Structures are given as C-alpha cells and as structure tokens.
Image (cartoon, rainbow, N blue to C red; front, side, top):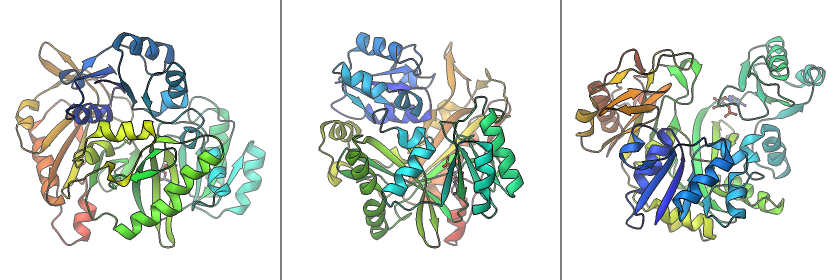
Length: 430
Ligand code: AMP
C-alpha cells in the first residue's frame, strides 16, 4: 500500500523509516519531508498548516493511509477534512485534539473525569489571575492556553513573577499572539515520564515508556527546547505501574472523550510527573513526541502500519505491539544558538561513516540535500539513535556515531540518559 506522512522533522523520519520496514507498504511519500527523509521516501512540497494543500497532495498521491506527524494540522482539523472525503487518516479529530491544543480544556476535562493532575485555576483576565494567585504558593506554573511549541509554560518563583508572566501571555508579548486564557498550576516535583498509548476510540494499547531531555544544556540547564534527546528502556516502569496508568489515566481519558462525543483515535501522549504521591498528568499531546519517537520506534519489533490500521478500524488490542527488551538512546545534534537564532546551511560531514555502525540510525530533523551533500536546515538537525541490550551500551554507541559527525557550530548534550545510569550505579557518559 501507499502511505503519505505529513511533517518534516526527526519524528517523521522515524515514522517513514519504520513504515518502510512493513512488507505491506510499497511506497512512502512525505510532505514536505527533509533532506534525510528524501533518501527513503518521495518528498513533495506543501505546508502542513494548509489543509487544502494537504488535500491536494493526497489527491495526487492517492495513499491508502495518511499519517499526520505534527500537532498543528491535527488542531486545525486535518483528520475531519480527510475523513469527510473518505480518505483514511491516522490521528484525532479537531475536537479530540483539544486535549493538546487547549490547556484549559484538558484541565477541566481531567477534573470532570477524576484524572490525577495538579491543582489549577483557569483565568480569563489579568485581574482574575491576580486574585487566583492567592490560592497558590510559589513556585507557581503559568501556562498559556493554546499551542505554543513548548514556549507557553513559565515556572514562576514568586507570585509577582507569575503575575508578570500571565500579563505577558494575555498581551501577546511572550508568544507573539495574545492568549485569551491563562492557566495557573500547582508546581509538582518528581521524575518526568512520557507514557504513550494507541487508541481506537474505545480500547488502548500502551507503547514503551521514554524520557526526553527538554533543556538545551547538560545537567538540565538553559532554556527549554523541542527536545535534545531521549532514551527508552524496558525497566523504566514496571507492569503494575503500566496497568495503573492505563486504568487511572489512559482508559478514563478515552472513555471520557467518547462520553463527550469526541472519540479519541490515534496516539495519546501523556506527559507525567511521577510525584511522591503518585503519577500526575502535566499535559497531553495528540501525536507522537519528538525525539521520543526516534528512541521508541527503534525498539518496536511489530509492524507500525498494522497498529495504525487497528486504530483507524477500531480494533486495537494489547497484541498490536511487540517490543525488543533492548534499550535505546537518541542524541539530538542542533545548530549553535538553538533554541534562539542560529545560522543554517552548514555542510554536514561524517554521516556515511556513522551510518555504517550497527544498530545505529541517524534520523534527520532539519537538513537539506544538495549535490550529494547534506546541509543544516533547522534548529534541531539530527537525532542520532542507537539500540543495544543495555542502556549504557546504547548511549555509548549513539555518542560514538555523534563523534563521527561534524558541522560548524554544532551543539549536543553529553548527558542523554546519564542520570538513570548514574542512579543504577553504572558509569556515566560524557
Ligand atoms: P507542558 O507543556 O504542560 O508539559 O509543560 C512543559 C514543561 O513544564 C513540562 O515538561 C514540565 O517540565 C514543566 N511543567 C509543566 N507543568 C508543571 C507542573 N505543574 N509542575 C512542575 N513542572 C511543570
């Protein structure tokens, strides 16, 4: 069958790579894709934010299934538009995607369905925000309501700081466009964990857990980014915890959405804080994460297209996934300056050598190809991913591949996965 993937990052490269392993997939197209994806799929021009354009591409390609990578087209209703025209598409509808596109919707939904999450207040004006601040003690988490690509969350150390952050969200100073709602939240501490499930609107099947590294610098320092690396191991959470998360979070979310008339199909990404009093939901995403997808798909032994079809056709079961017990690690190589301004167009060397390492895959996040060479074309450039029976070996192999790759002003964290290795008494990397 022909499959169309929408998006242009490392997540989409990992999806394309995994889909191509299916004996049932004959051809993969990607719109718009990137330099690295172009080596494995036919890339077509188009802007994923423009649904009419995506429909035109689908009309041209005639895919049996379309897989949507990023959140923006989902929140704009791409699944509704494709489904209306009889096109099979993987992901939630616009109404269901509100779990990600509106933080106030997600918090109120969790309250209605008794899903564990931090105490909160939804504020519609600066005045209301200032009054609500009295209910919280510092630090206080301040969140803009809409999609903000990771930039809409401020952890304020004082009430004054929280009031100032809220004011900047209302005015548009922080994000470039004004937020009509701002959510205040109790600060939670603990270990963060990404728990993803596949849903068909009724049933769910868990994917393996993973953890990403949001801050740009080693030791979790510096500004937040889209993600600087991720790892996944078989023992991140045990079977009783998976069952708990399914029973108290994933299944109630899917049942709750169905009861509210917005069936949730696709990947439900639960961003969790594992607090001393139990897991709490920090956020939902309505799609695969980036760079967790690179680490997670490296461990998937079953056929991704089978799982996607099961979601579309309403027949998800636990048996839809098979996983390797190996661990995986993805190290993101970024342009110097990212997440601030950076210079693109740097020539990348060493990709051929790195590709020859066994159980290593270099996923491209932001590259372009010209005259047989690859050039940087984004903040996040590559996601160098390795898999091995033990996490420390996966980490070492990923960094071995990283050491072979070079471009001017490149940056990467040297401690991806190191904290967990340190904890178990093993040696750390970097
Ligand atoms: P979100 O987009 O809601 O996941 O928030 C982005 C990041 O902010 C999370 O990955 C956490 O690191 C942090 N964060 C969000 N909410 C809280 C909270 N209630 N307590 C502590 N940290 C939080």
